[in-house]
Image (tube, rainbow, N blue to C red; front, side, top):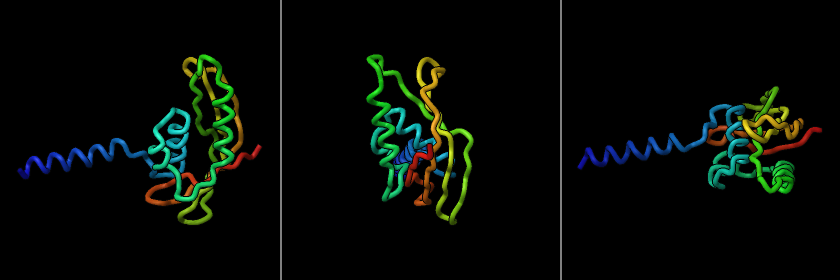
Length: 136
């Protein structure tokens, strides 16, 4: 019986570690957030990457515009951060200013655009995205 319970416990811990996003650093948490938002992740996964009281309205508008502009082929648009400038206003807050690079098409070779953004992150059981503000 003990072996069975140990196996179940190990399975739960392994599953949790395998499915929990990496939020160890602000930069990694931001890339995980982009991956979740642009790759159609389940809402639960996105929730794991944002703070308790997020202000993401500007970023949500960008997502809506991109979704509306997709053609009939509905190509996947991906995003990544380029040239990160990281600032720590306090021990539990970070600001990342970055170029948000958007690509689509086969092997993501077609450029959709590049925009300057600032992302605010807070430490809440790991780093979480809490704000997004377009700088262009």
